[in-house]
Image (cartoon, rainbow, N blue to C red; front, top):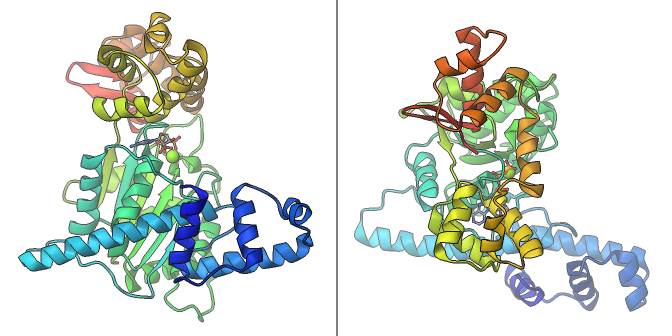
Length: 435
Ligand SMILES: Nc1ncnc2c1ncn2[C@@H]1O[C@H](COP(=O)(O)OP(=O)(O)OP(=O)(O)O)[C@@H](O)[C@H]1O
Ligand SMILES: [Mg+2]
């Protein structure tokens, strides 16, 4: 979105109410990333006055967009707002068409004016490619099956966050409350619960609960009172590195209860998680006929991944593009990082890059290293042997490779753990690395 488009969105959001001269300056300068001091110097205003006026402007936009707007997030929020408006118009059109055919199967969109959305720090996904099947599956789970807990699971960079935002944009009108939060900084449970409660609160005047147990009970009431969609990104941040998958960091064990209550409790809401590692509660509760589901996110299919590389301005034959995409199993982040390296080091030529035969370097190595660093000692050894074997390997072969001897029960636990981290795949002939 460019500045002029953002201003047009503001005009629409404010119902054609015009910004004042100072607000206009603040908006344009903030768009360029300027501080209030820099604006003051450039336009001859007292920075304190600009800050006050800025606060009023963000407040005005918060009311108009129905979500908190700040000097930092306003470009993202306005882009989201524009997409939301567009999606709403399309959805309304689709509903009208459905109504005409008298065969609509989706719940009707919410036209409730008290609908509230808080996108938090959700990324803006303007050039989102493909994922139609995954979106259709997730939408079906949420809207048709009324799943209470859906987890998007996959390796780093696979596109979990992007998919969760896209999903939320597409289903938002079926919920009265939508809140998107990243757990990247591992907020203590009580902090997250307070954020959720304050946003979802069925009764804003009631006294807020203090203990974790009371907060959980309060949250469940809120999830019963309204149809809410909660999206929690980066759930793996709550897990302890170097331990078997699903081991919570000290002090974070309460999150298990949160998932359990939402997954099993009676309410009309849904929680979508994204995670690199599968939470044990999810593993215990998931099932095709259960209200808890897991979507294992694989790489982008060839055609979509090729479009992503094309957008990065790379040049190469179709076969070269295919080879590059396969090297990274369609992982969008790995492809984007590599595309930048190909631009910088090989003048954008895929053939030159492929001749070097090094698919894992620099940024991509860091991406993998981040995940390897989180493994337990036994998991690291297994990854090593799987990499050495190259072909799929059976658990028995692995046991024979490992020294000192590892009992089968421990080995199976570690293999399961790696599978939950999306680092290995189970094939008909055995286990192999997901790369
Ligand atoms: N379908 C897509 N179309 C276009 N770009 C995508 C798509 N999916 C992901 N990307 C881009 O790839 C990058 C990685 O995606 P994203 O951050 O969603 O991955 P992730 O699985 O959440 O990774 P992490 O585990 O590190 O949080 C982002 O820059 C994102 O915009
Ligand atoms: Mg992510």
